[in-house]
Image (cartoon, rainbow, N blue to C red; front, side, top):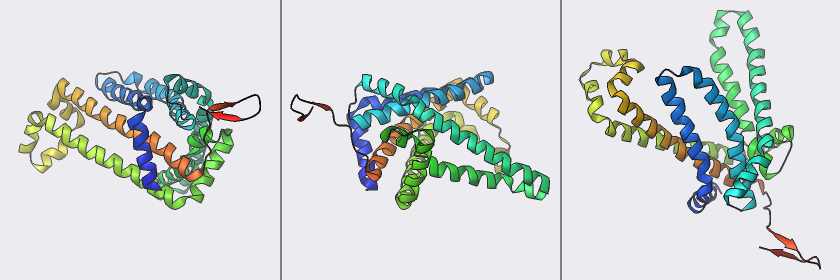
Length: 275
């Protein structure tokens, strides 16, 4: 069924261009997040992160809503984005504050115990964050496909993961593999496009390479190289984002047994006509 979910996602992306809007927006924000700090606009980093946080629920609602309704018009995308906006945003905020509270509750006693215990805090906190994300990752698909409330979306996500643990592990592994392949291809393309500018690095010793700082690399590739880097990075974000959202929706729909909305109407005798 995992292969069915992947092929289903690919089919959705191939047939319905509106689903690519989530990737295009994410790619544009990725370019801004990369380029603006380089040119001295670090002040805008936090507003851009906030903008992405506020835009993502609309895009996710649009993608999932159109897939659920099997209506891939722009109007349906916008309407779904508005309809499910707070159903996605509010559980995300609950999960975020739960992570923050967990970090605080773990950090305080570890800090009081001493420096030795504090040294182990980072991997412990990372493990806690990953565990929470692992079980609550499907809250947004639950919120749209099952139209649940804030806490029910989180509860159902945990239940869905526990009931389909093996398939979910394959789901995560598939996404990791896809991202790794895209990253490798992007690195290859980036190196090929900037081969001449990166040539001085080939003459450096291992010690000199270790001493190279990010600002040194930026100075080496110049303005043109920075924009090439931003474009290659944006392409990766676009492709991975559209795959992730389509695959996630297809995977959840296949494993949760969600019933689809039937487009149609009843006539005066109570007979259903699908259209």
